[in-house]
Amino acid sequence: MVSIAELARLLGLPFQGEGTHTLTRVSSWDEADASSLIFFDGRGMDSAFPSSLPAGCIIAPKKNLRPGWNALISENPKLDFARAANCLLPRPRGSGARHPSAVVEPGAVVDPEVDLAAGVVVGAGAHVGCGCILHAGVVIGSGCIVGEDCILHPRVLLYPGARLGNRVTVHAGSVIGGDGFGYVSDGRQQIKFPQAGGVVIEEDVEIGCNTTIDRGSLGTTRIGAGAKIDNLVQIAHNVQIGRGVVIAAQTGISGSTVIEDFAVIGGQVGFGDHARVESGAIIGSKAGVLPGKIVRGGEVYWGIPVRPLREYKKLNALFGRLPQMKERIEQLQQQVRRLEEGLKSLSGDGEVRSGNGSPGAS
Image 1: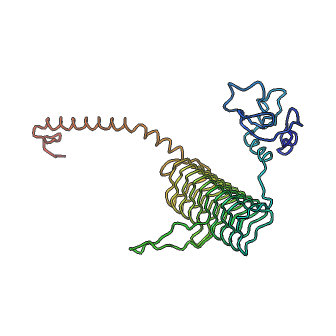
Image 2: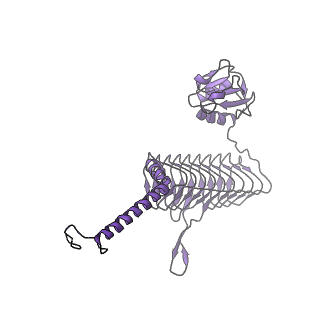
Image 3: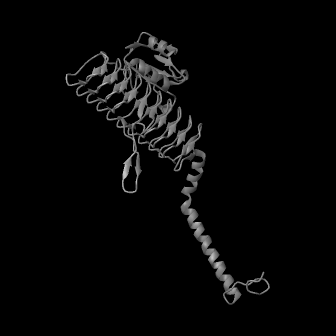
C-alpha cells in the first residue's frame, strides 16, 4: 500500500489530485477500482477516452489528464507504470521457511533467510545466498553458487557448478548447465567432445519457462547482467550474451555465438555457430543468421538469410510479384519463339542468313 504522493516521490514525478489516496495494485482499465493504478500513453483510446477516471490513479501525459483526476504526470507512461508496479508489488524475498521434505546435502551452505519448498535438493558444496526462494522440486547441483534474492520457480535444475548472480529469476522447468551438443566423427561413430566448462548467469537476469542454457565445452557460457530471455529458448555451449539483451521465445543459438550488449532478438530466430550480433542490433522474428555471420549494430534485420530490413522489404515486395513476373517471362519466351520461327521461314531452308545471303557469313 503506497500513497499517491509517496509513489510520486519514489518515481520522481509530479502529481495532481489527492496525494493521500492509497494504492495497492496495478491493473488494466477494465479491471480497475479505487485501489488501482492504470496508465495511458496516448494510443488506442483517443476516440473513447472516458470523462471519469475508473481507477484510484492514472499515469499519463499532462495533455491527456482531466481536472480533478488523481494522476502521476509522465511523458513516458508505460515505463513509469512498470517502475510503479515494482513499488506496489516489490520482489518477494525469502524469510527462512523450510519444508520438511527439502534436502540440503552435507557441505552445502544455505543462508538462514532462504525459503526451501517441498522436494528441493541442494547438492554438496553448493552455496545459496540470503533472501532466495526455491520453489517446489528445484534441484541445485553440487558446487553451484546462487547469489542473493534469486527466485527459482518449480522444477528448475542447475547442473553442478552453475553460477547465478544476485536477483536472478528462473521460471519453471528451465535447465541451466546441461552438456552442450558437441561430437566428433571417427567415420564409424560420434565421439562426444568434452563438455567440461561452466555457465555464469550475471545479476538481474530473467529466464523464461523451459529454457535451456548449456555449459561451455571447455570455456564458459555467459549471460550478461540484466538480460531477459523468454520461454523455450535454447542457448548452446560457449555462447556469450551481453548486458541488457532481450531474446524472445523459441530462438535457438548455436555454439560460440556472441550477442553483444542491448541487442534485441525476435521469436524463432535461428543462429548458426560462431555468429556475432553487434551491440544494439535488432533481429526480427523467424530470421536466420548463418554460421560466422556478423550482424552490424544499430540497424534492424529480417529474413533468411538475415539482411537489413530495407533490403528485406525490397526483396519481399518482389517476391509478392513473382506470379506476375513468371507470367510475363513466359509471354516473352513465346514471343521470342515466334520471332525465331518467322526468321526460319524467311530463310527458306530453315537457316537464318546474314545480310549478304550467305549462311553464317559475317
